Each structure stands twice: as structure tokens, then as C-alpha cells.
Image (cartoon, rainbow, N blue to C red):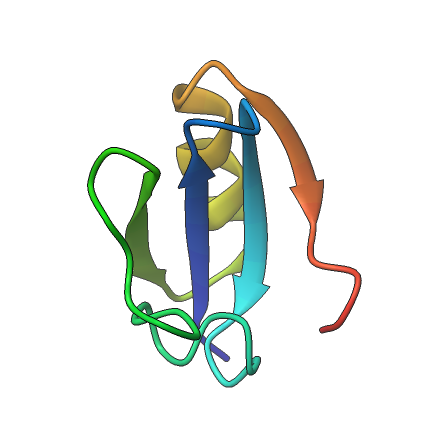
Length: 67
């Protein structure tokens, strides 16, 4: 499985997604991503790797509630 992290600058959080999640779409998001709102990090081959990257953003880390 592949994982992505969305760094939400406005929400001050980093969310871990499975690559195939509709909210992630392999790092493209649902409607694209504007740089001032956030950015995608990845892909990662493990959830642990994604968690390390999410923690490095210094934002609250959570897993996507949809995937």
C-alpha cells in the first residue's frame, strides 16, 4: 500500500491518507491543492514512513476518517 500526507496549513494538521482514498487521489486531492492552503507529501510505502513525515510538519497528526 502507498500512503500520502496532506499538510493542511489552514487547519494546522497533517492527515495520513491511503493513496486510493477519494480525498487523496494519489496526492492530487479532490480539487487540486493551492499552495497557500497546504501541500501533499509522498508517496510513502509504509504507514510508519508517512507518520514520520507527518510528524516532521510540526502539526497535529491524524489519520483520514474516510480511509
